[in-house]
Image (cartoon, rainbow, N blue to C red; front, side, top):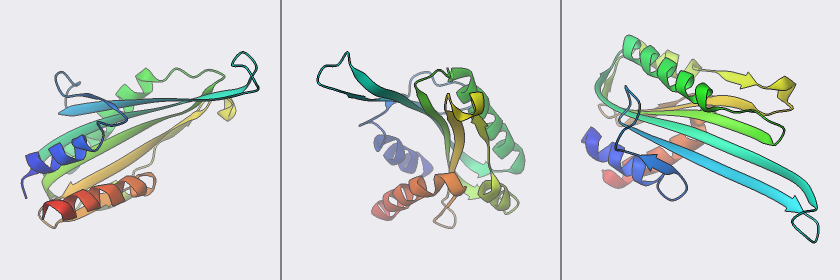
Length: 167
């Protein structure tokens, strides 16, 4: 499988609900995407709001020939750092998740436990102004497998479906 084709197919699945930036993503990423969702409930007229919540997700994509420990840590730090800069907690903020998707021809064996144990989270004002969590999915094309952390397990299913449709 070609990592360029795999990444293009994964990114294509985000176009429906996300603002995808392929022209000038931040370094060291190839593509980035942003989701902004707003949920509101009101009584009879929109001015009589019962509640309002806002959800955000910042997704970073990277394709590489070989995923080493050093590169993994660099990508994880860059994604989490940039995502946290974009979060603006306020009373209607529910969540701002940061997602990292890596497509690699080869993943070094030392990276596998790091991927499965990757965990970052942040709560704002004891959770009253929302939280942020880190999701991670890594495609290892040499083995035809998809690895993820616990938060990324739902996205792992989607990526597995994409990989099986390409084969």
